[in-house]
Amino acid sequence: MKETKENLRTLFLEKRLILSRTVREESSLAIANQCLKLPVWGFEYFHLFLPITKKAEVNTSFVLTLLQARDKNIVLPKVNSDDSLSSILLTDSTKIIKNKWEIPEPERGITITPLMLDVVFIPLLGYDTFGNRVGYGKGFYDDFLKSCKPNILKIGLSFFEPIRKIHGIRPEDITLNYCVTPERIHYF
Image (cartoon, rainbow, N blue to C red; front, side):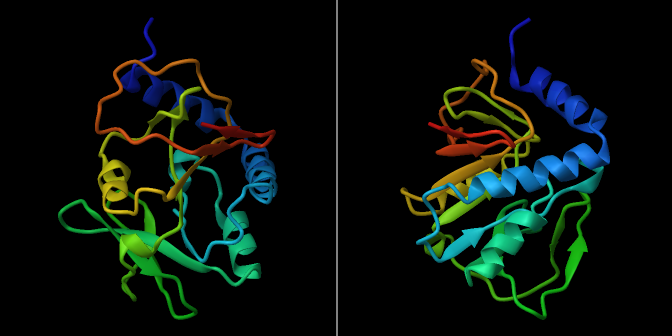
């Protein structure tokens, strides 16, 4: 069977959902600790997704804590009515709500232009040894990344190791620079 995006979406979602909550939390903490080894700590603006709990995503609260401890500007994604992403600066008064896809996001706040961002942590279901990723298929991040500066660092977070190759990659799909797992950092 070819490892197409559609097949991999199902496979990796099932793999995540069978992990116990304890394993997911321990693995999320290990991923955050691996992030300390990334060459990103001299940057200022970090775009960080908040996890969709029902889809057993990596708990990014540990990465959030690392960023806050280093006084970084943390920017959260917000899905607009046209399905584009906005970048909202996280402040002490930011109220987080869940949108129609159960994605936690800021209710409102200070919008940051994508060109100000230095690093983007990108949600994914799976990825390959070439840095291609499989998301949920809505194209939010591929579209969003086109509005960012060309040298923005794109970092995936995954509980799992990459597969060899994803079939069906399109020219508009944007590859990762890194993917962080509990055991290691993959460089692309």
